[in-house]
Image 1 (cartoon, rainbow, N blue to C red):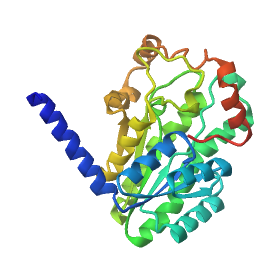
Image 2: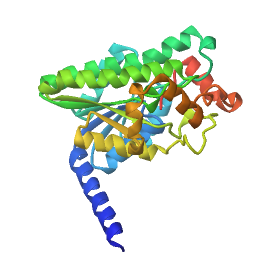
Image 3: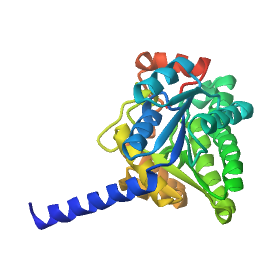
Length: 294
């Protein structure tokens, strides 16, 4: 093994030790936990020695996911404040007070803004943004009363990159990013930390039918899971998944012309307008009815 290999191995070992120390023994509740990113986060928390409870609007799917992992699975509608309170109550009764809430539930409709159905617009904002706000408020009140806790909100690089065809999703995820930073600033003195993790396009149902390219590649869920666990361990306010996309955080300050040129070069100018609708049909039907989570 070369010196560089030994250094890289040593750093990886230290990171794993840091994650295990920061996660082990904690009760972590994950919304949208029945599949995709949420399920991956739960698996990694368990591997790091944490205790998990899953929440999801799909009662059958969350029941199966929970059985597969050997954890609690609870039906949850993140757009309903009463449902969130019941979820947190149940987690406390069955697992223990929530140390970390991961607000992961979300949907991602794509297509021309002029063609968006009003009901789907409202559903997207309610799940992707309002649900994060309600979940954060409910958990933070309990955490502040106990003297501490952490909330990790799953945003997206889309919240930093204007992408035609993702208008409503872009707006909701941008809101999650700034909301998280503001609430962290407000509540840190009470021991409650709030973070945002911004995944790249991730290999889940959300990206079905999208035509990525060599410049815009989707990542596997394990990449996002690792960054979430690192965020829990370090309490950093914002993280990209993967961290190689940190440059995305400066794009809001770029001149409009530069951003639009970049969208043309990377293909995001048309990527979410020119989709394989037949491949995406099942997902589109699901989010148009009751909302999918990932």
